[in-house]
Image 1 (cartoon, rainbow, N blue to C red):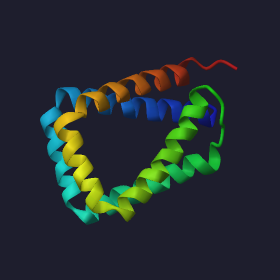
Image 2 (cartoon, helix red, strand yellow):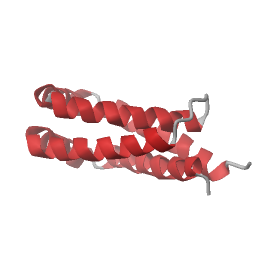
Image 3 (cartoon, rainbow, N blue to C red):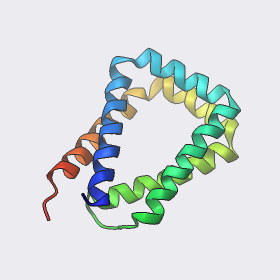
Length: 128
């Protein structure tokens, strides 16, 4: 299995599951997001995980093309950016979490489900 296919399946299933959980377990996800953003050490740990996974993708999967492979690379770089923001601006992240959990969770859920479905399908259907 090619690394792109593996990442497409992994990230696709992750985004899909998270999106569905956002819809069906909305209150639980909102509570966890508020708890996460209120703890600077929890934000730092989540930033470390984002940084590691983002760097793995950025180092070993630098494919910039208009396909699922390019989307995977973009997600890797966004993970690095997210980690830097969480480390550097924890108070702003806390404010953002409180706004998004009150108003924008549906948009996040829908985007996650769409990205998850696209990546999972792409990873499963690749034939070279």
